[in-house]
Image 1 (tube, rainbow, N blue to C red):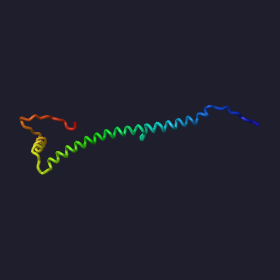
Image 2: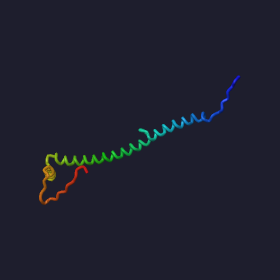
Image 3: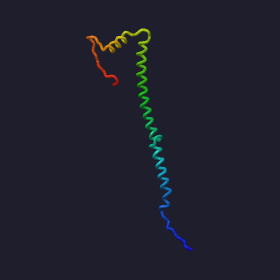
Image 4: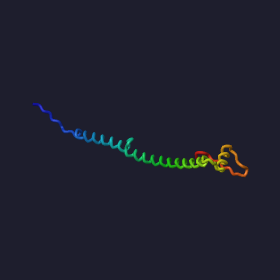
Length: 106
């Protein structure tokens, strides 16, 4: 009867732990850096704060515009508002007035 004796190799013992480490590393990396990972949560929270600031700014601009529109719609137009709008539209000023030029949107 012939028998073969195999020598024990350490390579066989390391296959399962190495596969496990690679598997856990892959999913661990994506749990932290992936599209829905922990790091993305922090980035989304920062973006939400920035967007909230922008929303507050836009709301304050809207309130200011609504106030100006209300002054024009109450049935009686304020003389100062009418004068200001007419001068802006016609691009006119009096000789004794100081004109300050500003860029819009900045």
